[in-house]
Image (cartoon, rainbow, N blue to C red; front, side, top):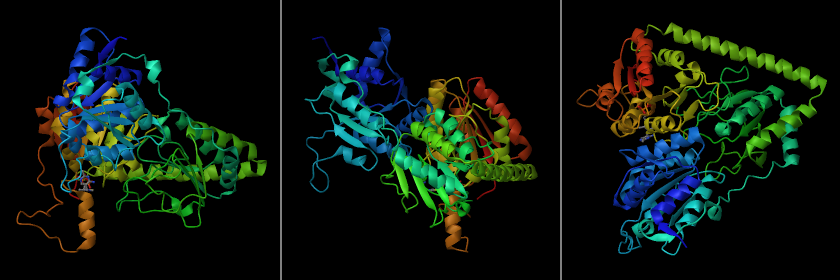
Length: 566
Ligand SMILES: Cc1ncc(C[n+]2csc(CCOP(=O)(O)OP(=O)(O)O)c2C)c(N)n1
């Protein structure tokens, strides 16, 4: 039988799973893969591209962003124990975001090592709280089968990260060459939704006075946006799209506003009026808003993971839940509802539609006026900044959002209408926006990518490690920093706990102020990009336009906008 190197087998399994780019950060354990890629390229064979990120957390976050755009499984290579330790926050975000990614690392000197408790050293332990499966590929296993199994576990529902370790000999040794059919994916689709339960859901929704739909990640299948719109229009129900994806057009008259990040902000889900809540593919965000369904409200839940394993939904479970693929369940439910609508019901629903549409129109008008009224505020108002960002976005621009205490301004001012135009972070590690934008741009080079982040998030995002690859791999994006010169969310907590403003010898509230801030625009310029700080309100729009022109010309850009401290 013909043989090839383990590293070549690795590339073949990646090819078979549609992996086009591998984000990585190297160590000697990965060298056989780097060599195999060079060999494949030199001989014109199909191989994923290797994209080096100068910090492992950027590599994993770029894979996260790439998946959210491409829908393809990812593989990230890091150096053994050391590289694995660098990805902790990014791995948490990938778990919360249901990202099918295989994290692949060599095993560090396993045989002789023990931990402080004299137990055998266990490298996988570092990842075990965040991955669906961790496994060391032993010498008697075939790399084709194990790597395919890892992709299958990552891709099966609910999706999520897996961790594989290996000894270097696995990649340098020879293995039997295999055809992809011999290790084909065994991920099977979910069975259709139980029609009886779906009928019960249709009945409960139709008897509701104020049904509310919350949809979390339905949009990962783009056709679901159309399906969800059909359901909402049939039922004449308000929809709150979750903050991680563009599930429902924010301009639609039935849109009750995108969900906001919690943490003492303007928790905006209109639960108080809802007597029936239909949650579709919905997870609570890591920091949920401080609003809950009414205790007497009926909760209906359609999800690939209706048990919300590890993440309880509002702590009160659901009255009816269905494990289903929403691509099939939403159209079936819509048909059932249509079939049950009597003429009298139809009149009632149309009235509700009119009422919701009017509310939507009024809310948008007020928010628009609010932003314009702040056009001359100095320091610059976050609402004015978001208003100006809305001006420069096109319908198919990919917006990557990781705002924290300013997230209300995005929800109030920025519309997203098309599938694939909003990426948000489900997890809590605020290091996501730069790496995710890099991955998104690599996945869709022809589209414009604009990433919104906090000043804390810019720094946590390892800017040099993220921006250098954006220049080197010609993946330019625009990063806008909502710079409140502080860890604002922490300020809120401190202020709630104490009326006194304790400042240190430098006049700063320790652990809150990041002031005066570093010159973040200069960091962009140091990485071959365009960078500018904006302090005057009238400069916001011109600066954003100038930066976007640079991005379209091939340069990454950072616009650092100074907002009120807070
Ligand atoms: C990587 C990481 N470290 C620490 C925290 C804890 N934390 C939550 S909110 C917050 C402040 C965030 O500041 P910033 O990102 O600048 O956003 P702002 O609150 O100012 O809008 C911190 C430190 C976190 N969520 N993620």
